[in-house]
Length: 532
Image (tube, rainbow, N blue to C red; front, side, top):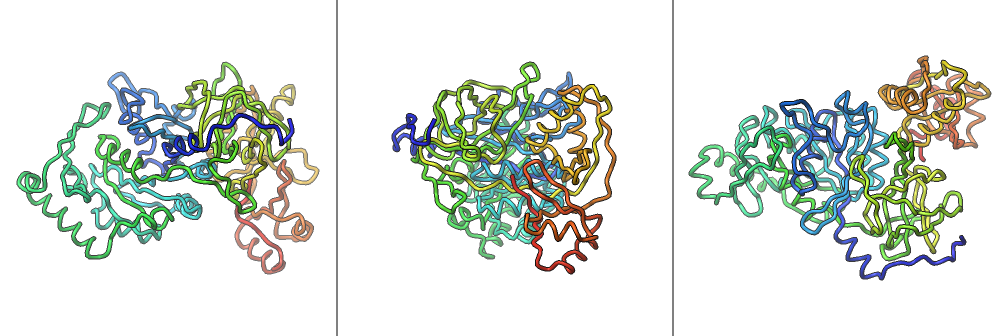
């Protein structure tokens, strides 16, 4: 297929109206802030599930919709991002559930490349933690709007005014509450709607499995029934107003201001308010900036960015899914597109709408939608697919690895499977697979050691390969340009490792070595971020 072959594209009015109905957002948080629980509760309140799965049942823990890997269910943590599509109030949501653990922050960065908005989920007792501050900084650097949800307010924690100050000081954003808690942390009565001045009282449900009944009271009735708790909430909001905490939609759209909501995902308190806020404030898709700085208009012919590749989501079929965010035009099942990286055509015949591990065949989709293309073997993370008008979107940044191991295949008869497994894990971004010169032993590199656990388990479970790992003493890596590689290789302060795509990384045993190389070679550019 040539780039001049025209595929059917919907009228611009239809594309624009459908895009306006989309809200594509990610949830980012530190570990144990309740991200997976919040994801389940958003599905509950939208009607996508009848009963939340992230709660304890008497017969044991039910499966969580967004955690589909055996490792996730066994350890109780999210280690892989998941796409969940659902509708509510005539709005189509594409929720990108990200791993909460720092060790899997690279997956979160890939997801942010596909999102138009992010929900920052904070634990009321812990606030913003340093280990995931980098994720918030990357989201803010992309200029995407950020909505803050303070979770677990029904437990002891920081006072609300202290939390607002903490968010502003730590994230460098103006924090403006749009709901305010009534009652101290641990004695959460409900929220004061700052816009209308009404009080919404929450009532717990059994195990938090169904929606929490809400009672809306006037300010006068709330004052009579809640007494000092209501008075304190009103006075705190007056203090914030006097300090200039005013809502500004333009600053929110530019990623400079974050609206703040309070609630408890486990108890379902405030979840509806967050869902309504996403409808009202989260931006619909807009034209996407390409690698040359131009803007691909929504009404332009079909284009999409591949931000994730995942193999063996369904072990019975041993398939490979490329997750792509539609950036322009209308997707139609069966259409043919070009891969901007390879110039080769690809048939988009097997496309699915995703809901965790579950899939439904999708016939058409619009900007903002996230769909999965099955068995797209020639597609990699960061690829751009397009029809008619050529375009290529910018590379997706990744974090420089901090942990390194040499991996050995313990069964020589499984050499082919060993090589295929490493290639798959590298393409997905589970780990970086590197080589040192002519040394045949592959080196795995990761942001955190839990990535190695996932790699070992998947090699065993999906490829039947048993491996051994030997830790290396490098602790820092920086990307090096081809022009500077020879100078770095000649230095005694670093060693050079090469990724399959040709990217070269200088690795250092400690920061002292990095500083020494920078002093010896001041003209060499060392980049802390790599790209795919």
